[in-house]
Image (cartoon, rainbow, N blue to C red):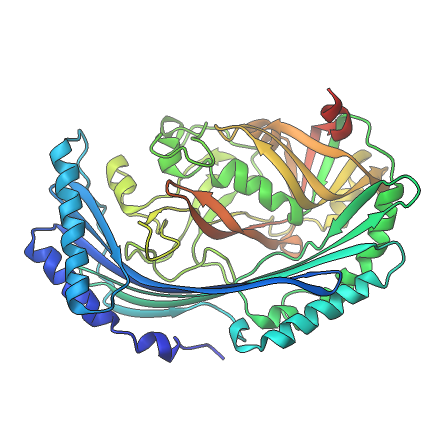
Length: 503
């Protein structure tokens, strides 16, 4: 059954605070003002060898007022939930805008038009709020599953963790949009470690279950087969410990969605944030090689490459009803038939570049932070009649099948990169022929995506992602998903990581 917004959040004086703040901003001459009240509860539980190793549970509650005054931004936030305090915060936001305007700028802040949506409510798709489940029950399940892994031959240690977030947001602006939203997300993770007592050599194997916009049901039977994955890990880890080191060279790759999502995030997701491409943003991930003058021209990849930005995907970590500028969630093309055709936008960048309406990418991670342009669910689309993963592997004579993400490195233009993974399987004559170790694939963004010969069908599509995408100064963190099918790449450069480390 669809959930309703928590009564405890609805009981807060959101509307009265917004009315006081927006009225003050108008009276002081703001041409635009928005008010945002948020309550974000975040918790984590950690176990080491089936024993509790740490836990946290915190709630951030407050509100923010952002204005455009004299062609400049102003922003202020507060925690005092009274009308006088909200009006004072609005006055502080206007005062900040006046200081910025007086300092002079060649560029006035203007926002792309967005229709007033009136009053709207949106709740993400989940069944059981993880915070409604007793902590003892959560810890018991993590311990039970850790015990399964610890009881398997060859497993020396097990790390387990669960992160959960329950986010409520009320938004109102001077154009008349008023939204109330609620999102829930969870991220369970288990890592098994093997140690060779004779040589001291060790390695690990982590679950590939992605974080999701779901609730506690994700751990109890909806969305992932945990029993199957936990059963497989000890054997896969034992095989990995015995596996030979890879011989560096060019290989065909079949990349599983559990690995490919991260390559999408780093080489497409960040590169198509238009504030980066324009040079307005460089924190954490640098700028972008996919500059604005290449829109409609850049051959980003092969003709089978179709990538969308999407704020509407069910269970997506970046899925919303409305962004933090009152823009309704949308889905749009970023790469079409291999060509760059779009970017991720907020209202200021959309107006500045003449691209029309924002596609809803403004987001702040807390009531104390200003909204910035953030990543949507950026996803590689499957071929409607595409092959299975097994059939993609069957088309490779000499190659590697890549599963699970691990480490990565990419330059500040999102162009030169290398990625490792959790599991690498040698492909010989269309069949898997055992695991390999010390593997990393290396390429430039356009060469890699240009080498993509086939994408799998919808049956191979998985929505991966992360809770911890960083951006901005002061730093903000956002959760984002990236869907993709399995995909076949030809002639990709493979590095041996032990040889590289020794150079």
